[in-house]
Length: 300
Ligand code: ADP
Ligand code: MG
Image (tube, rainbow, N blue to C red):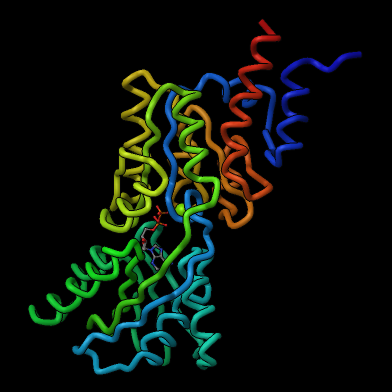
């Protein structure tokens, strides 16, 4: 017997390295007319590296101390930024003390108690609100963060016992196929792809420009990503969401169709998404949409 078109399309998608979870999903992929992508780990390679360690004057810690405390707190996290911080500390041969009472907030950062000190690591804009520190320390922190972000780096703040103690500059590369993928998706869907990110607007704008994305929504919490997708859908769009993180899960679940990046993706994103990119190529997204379109023409 010949295979029904949607099933052959699933087999074909598999050859492109995409796991499509059902025939219904295979069909829905071809209906999308808008695309929203996450930044870290989706548009970027997701193997970021710490390029800068900048102690702030208030806490009196040196580079090694800031990095070691941050890495100890980040060790239990599966976020790509957390892995970058831990790797940087290991490369410098730093001893990582045990961390207790680990917590993580998607889109914000992590907290833990390290050697009796309360450590928080995460988005400067979110952590600075809760931190102590004089106006001068805050000004120093804001200025240093802005400087790192201007060059497209993600700035991560390390707060120790309530005081802003240092900033880490983290650089991630755009995927080599990002710009071509954005162009194909724009052509296929007839609409300009949107970037949804928890990162800072400055860092996001730098990367979006390289990828050819004009519509950038930054500083978003998981709920804000969800709201952005709902807004597009209530305007009548069928939205394809592409993401990798725990922070993308609500948006992946609510979207008309959700695709997760498999290699570095969080378990929650992989379970929530309708399809998973197993081979690490973003270009598989438009290829799969095109396969669906072709199969649907054969079905009807
Ligand atoms: P994106 O939407 O680009 O994938 P996230 O929502 O995962 O980014 O993270 C948004 C921001 O929150 C990051 O830029 C970072 O400042 C902060 N953040 C989140 N998780 C962590 C973490 N584990 N360590 C450090 N910073 C984090
Ligand atoms: Mg991400």
